[in-house]
Image 1 (cartoon, helix red, strand yellow):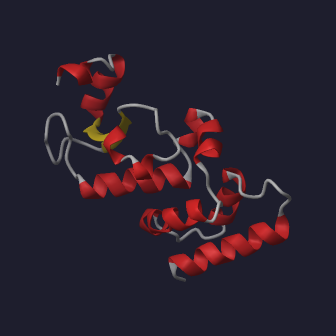
Image 2 (cartoon, one colour; image 1 turned 45 degrees about the horizontal axis):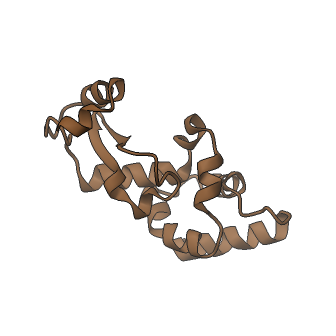
Length: 141
């Protein structure tokens, strides 16, 4: 199934099954969960269409508690895209410095990171832990 067909199916399901607030992330997540083989790349490719059609919106994504936000298909797609594009740590520049993680340099555009990739950085676990303990360290780099 192509990404466009997936989105069209999801929109049909939303329209048929849910009330006025059907475009919320939780409903989309339930629909995406019906497609266990969907890849983060397919979700990434569909993001412009999902936002344009109102299936996803930044305000709803921002309203999700951060711990839950990090578990969404949306965040998985954004973070996997970045790790594919930049397969090394932005600080230590080691390509194999352990599992890579995506760090929010700012939360200003949370929920629309896909349009503001400059707000994010790919880091190895050690560097992510080091930066997370004192975010002001970014300013000194």
